[in-house]
Amino acid sequence: MKRKIIVVGIIIVLMLILWLVFRNPNKRQETNVLLTPTPTESISPEEEQNYLENGEVEIPEGEQKILDETGKLIDKLPLENEQFNLFFDYGVNKFVVFYKNGETNNFTVLKEWLVKNNYGNIPMEEFVIGETL
Image (tube, rainbow, N blue to C red; front, side, top):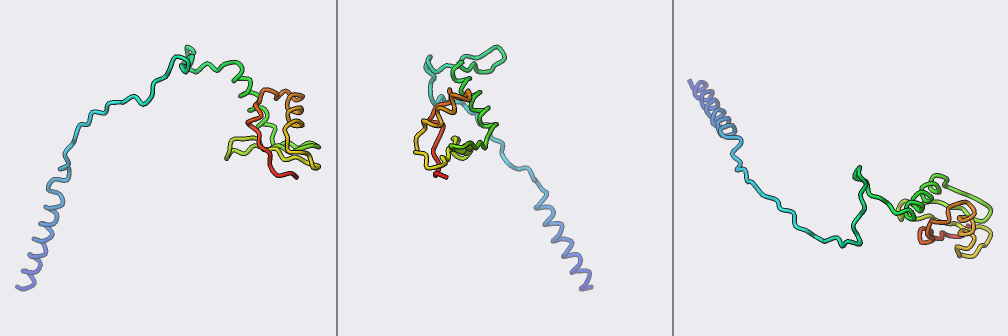
């Protein structure tokens, strides 16, 4: 008899627990929030981009030459010649020049090489000098 009372009590407790858990699982209130974009900055007419018919941005010819030459030079790296080694550091997004044979830390040698090898449109600001080898 005692055993039946315990079993019935356990069944009642389990049913109560199940009822509490499953009585209304989705009782969350849905809220409708209307998101409204707020302008953060305006674009002046000088800053407007020229879009082509396919939606791409038209890049000015001078900038396109810089991009093309930069990409071609990156594809040739690492580069080593008798005067310097050249690498690209993706962490700082710059070319790194390591001079050899006690060269001075100026860009004259590099600039001459860039012009001679058809990379003369890349601005010198894109290059930094590493430690001398």
